[in-house]
Amino acid sequence: MSDIKKNDDGTYSFVIDIGKDIFTGKRKQVRRKGFKTKRDAKEAIKNIMLKAESEKSINKNVANSVFMEFFDSWLEHKKIAIQHSTYLRYKHTKRYLLEPYFKNIKIYQIDESILSEFISSLVGRELAPSTIRRGWTTVRAVLKKAAKKHAFNMEICEDILLPQMQNISNVWTEEQINNFLDAPNKHKKLSRHYNACAFALLTGMRKQEVLGLRWRDVYFEEKLCHIQQTVTETENGFDVVSRGKTNSSLGKVALPDKAFYYLKRQKVQQEIDKTLLEDNYEDQDLIFCRKDGKVLKPSLLNNGFRLVIKKLGLPHIRFHDLRHTHATYLLSKGINPKVIQERLRHKDIRTTLGIYGHASLTMQKEAADLLDKRFN
Image (cartoon, rainbow, N blue to C red):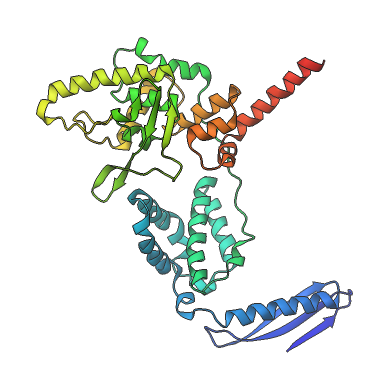
């Protein structure tokens, strides 16, 4: 039953009975107001009734599940298809982002206000926009699974607002890049992991890709390397796997002549290690590895990088920022963004331009200056 009323201000409102709540058994009424015409009010009633009818076929067992318990079953089902490091990242996201808010909330209770409050709670913790988006992406993926089981309406997620992503800003200037690459000429003792860091800066390769690179993957005559495996965390520690971060991650990267300088330095260091350790050296054909030839833990490469930049007095950046520095420098020199996308092995050029928007803006300003010089 519904009752549409015309209010004193000329607008229309209504109260509609949509039956009993499937979980509490209590009568449910929906009130709406502010409609300009009676026809608008009738259309709203129609949509509400259609939604109420669809909810009658809802999967009560799943909808009545606590969100975090459903998350656990979702993750265990997903575990077989993801890398162990990704699995651990989901566990971390659960513990630090989701559990504090969703601990006792059931799926049927989740509506737009609860999801918006979740985002607000993350913003209130002053978390980075990328961290907040990771939390939201995870929640949305779990709810999508619930929707497939007819226990949630994904339309609820459509109007959730997220903080704007920040462009990459922690990159080195051309002068700082030169200072880093010239370090062997000025310092006799550098971290044994310096060569890997310099190679990453010159290629834009990810840390796990650099650590997984083998000598057989480098083609000296063609001046390129073929990324065919990466280092990742497994249940038994860190190991190499024949897959990348994404399906497009594996591929070939053209190498500048300078990169071979650091490969030759690494070869010399590796031969010394083999001579000293003899039979205790486990040759896995890895270029950048532990002293005994085994897989190098990524955190140790981070530590070596920090020691080098501290010794050189360079601004602190993360190891991954070497990849950002590489891309930003190329963009600033006018290299086509499509070429950079292929070099970084981004699946979509929108990813490249989205991350390096600040460099694109610099190029736009340079283009404007060029037009001024030509036509004035």
